[in-house]
Structure formats: structure tokens, C-alpha cells
Image 1 (cartoon, rainbow, N blue to C red):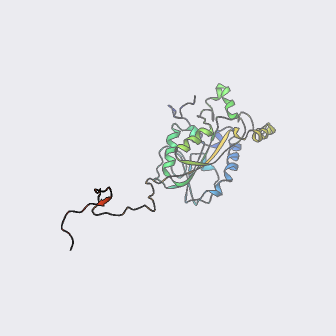
Image 2: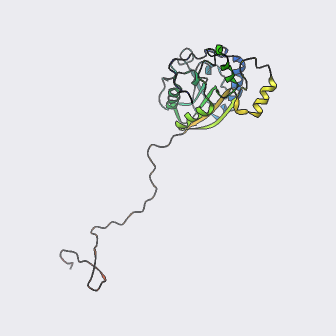
Image 3: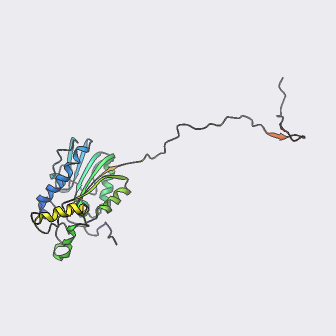
Length: 255
């Protein structure tokens, strides 16, 4: 049975990449996965949500205005679940490792959906529950350490949330096929073997989705079959011989 996404107690997010195990290596993996998609995202405003997003290079993205938002750093300092932005004012949003460390991930997605324009892109990066990273839960001492202190979700579950909000997922891939329990320099052949045979079991998922909205009012038909207008309907009566006859109208006869 899946646990509810909402957490009763706040979760402390990582303040920087170095707070995560092998953070520098993890950042390189995320950068390589995002570089392929940045040239395909257009618009005027790119929101980089969270402390980790502000340090990710996004120079390949052609969006001219890019700014970070976080409670403690960035151009805008505000809560991630209460964005001080107007409705439909952002063309693209990047949120790396935000859902698993937020008390209300559903509320965060609704806020991102509120500020995104129709046709805008949402880029999510997170730790996958269905991955070698889950081996860390075998050691109780790691339950209070990052990233195991967060609430990890499967990529399929996050994709279902986006589908309910009306998003079309363009890509859902996994990267960083590693447990993060030891140095990534160890057992490189095992990582390549896992990436080739089980590409969906990466410890980090990368989801790029596009917001689609249907019109609120249904479109009218371009043509309709109009019935002829009849001022005074003519009533047919059956005569004595069984033939239909037109009933005479009351009133004065015409000259």
C-alpha cells in the first residue's frame, strides 16, 4: 500500500549539492541529462525552484529571463508552496529534488501548475524509490540522512499526478544507476550493466512534461440545419373521401 504523499512533519531539504552523498558527481549526472532538453524549451521566463536549481547551469536554454526562488537564496525568496507569482506568468519551471523534501508535494505541483502558462514546460528531477538507492533503507542509521530522510516516490506515481493535472509527459527517463552508499568510482562495470539491462532502475528520474489545457467553453458548430419559418402552420384534415385536404383558415377571404 502506498503511503500518502502528505507528510505530517516538515522535511529538511538539502541546502546545497554537497549535502547529498557524492553531490558533485550527482550534479554532473543531472546536468548531462538536462542538457539534451534545454534547447527544446522556449518562452520568456524560466523559474528555477529550490536551492539546488539555482546552481544548475541552464545556458543551453534559450529562455532569456531565468531566476531562482528559494526561502533562503535566489533572486526571489519565498516558500516553495506559496509562489508570489501571477497566474500563467511562467513559461518553464525547473524543480530538482523538491517533491521528496516538501511537506505537501501535491500542493507544490498545484502551485507550479497555477503559474505556468498553457503549453509551458515543467522539468522535474527526483530520487526514485524503485532503484538501487532503496538499499540505504536496510541501515536504520541512514533513515535520518539525506536523501533517505525524504519521501521517495516512483516515477510512475509522479507521472500519474501530472496526468491528473492535465500534463503530457514528453520524457520519463532514469539516470545515475548507483546506490550512493559508496563512491561512484567503484564498480563502474556494474553501473553500466545496470544502465544497459535495466534503464528504468536509475536512482534519479528526469521528467519533462508540457501543460495542456482544454477550452472552458465548447466550440460552436460552424453550420446548422435551419428549419423554415412558418408564421401560421397549416393543418391537414382528412376529407370525406379519405383524401387529405387543407383546412380553411378563419378570417376574411382575400379579394
